[in-house]
Image 1 (cartoon, rainbow, N blue to C red):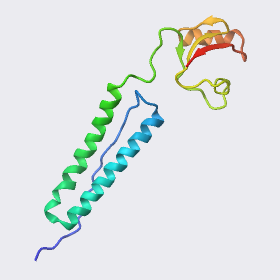
Image 2: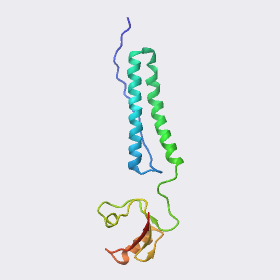
Image 3: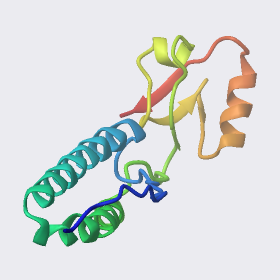
Image 4: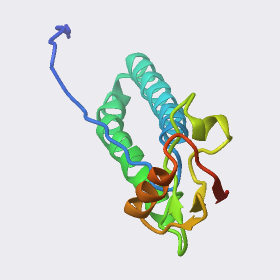
Length: 145
């Protein structure tokens, strides 16, 4: 008679991701969806192999290979798409505006390009800081989205 013994095995799978062509929030949403599909698929394979013992190898193979595929497919998608934020030819690209900050209150946010501040053309962080110091607390900004 064949008997089974439950023997715990510790396994750790790491997961990291990078957001180049999407925002971190968008990338998190996409990754969460893909991980959910992967998890459901692994669960279904495990349940199926419980009913049909000759299929027990499937979840064992699918777990690491499916996980690795998720990572590789996500990276391939990110690196094959154009970057969401890149250095413009003119101006300074705004990566983010803090909620409640004067920039955010004026509708500026991630992806906007600042061209002029207080009448001064800017093309670097140093020039931006200098232009903002001309009239502390007050800034006239020319920007494009």
